[in-house]
Image 1 (cartoon, rainbow, N blue to C red):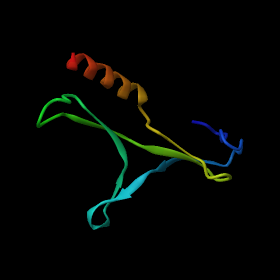
Image 2 (cartoon, rainbow, N blue to C red):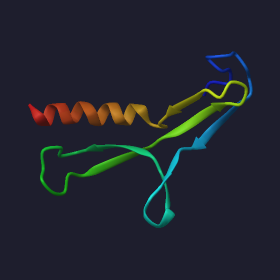
Image 3 (tube, helix red, strand yellow):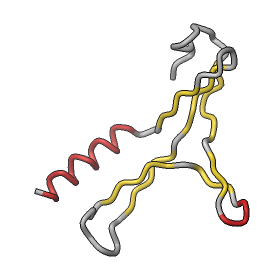
Length: 85
């Protein structure tokens, strides 16, 4: 992970911060990206979620979001392209 801010060059970085939202009844949940193994299916699409995390610069406030397994997301995307052809 980046240990230097790309905006202000500070090293005051907090890594791995949860990115959350509140749902019904103020239930807290992590924001995530979602892909489907069968994107054209009406039901049972086979959802796969990738939790969004963040690095925060405590000098300028810049927030960079990321997922931990981008290679897995790319591989799933390539499989879905083949399924849709």
